[in-house]
Image: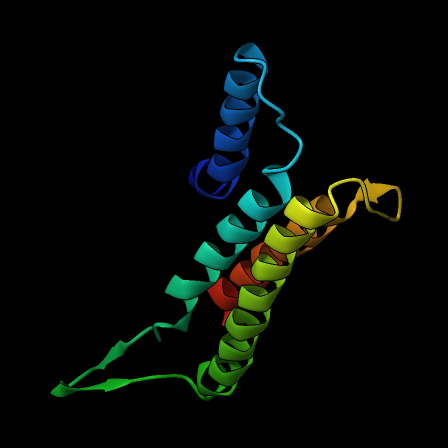
Length: 128
């Protein structure tokens, strides 16, 4: 249940912001893609911190798994890529708001993809 609250919270905020913008008669279509991309990017940043494990009998030392060490550059690559994806989503929402990809507004498709992939990477990191 805790994971649902944590990872679903950006979607809840998105819903509240959409409702507020709708009540105030402000165009709510342009912010969703960049918001989802920013939320997805924010999920990745805590993942780059390695999980340190104390070694029994060696209080001065910590260990990091080899799998996690191998996963770290992969995560940093996604942070860099998702930064560009967020920027592109912002650009598309401002300059090409009606552009579509696979039947969705392009900025929403970019943001949704970043958010979904971030959730998948978070799940993988929890298992590593």
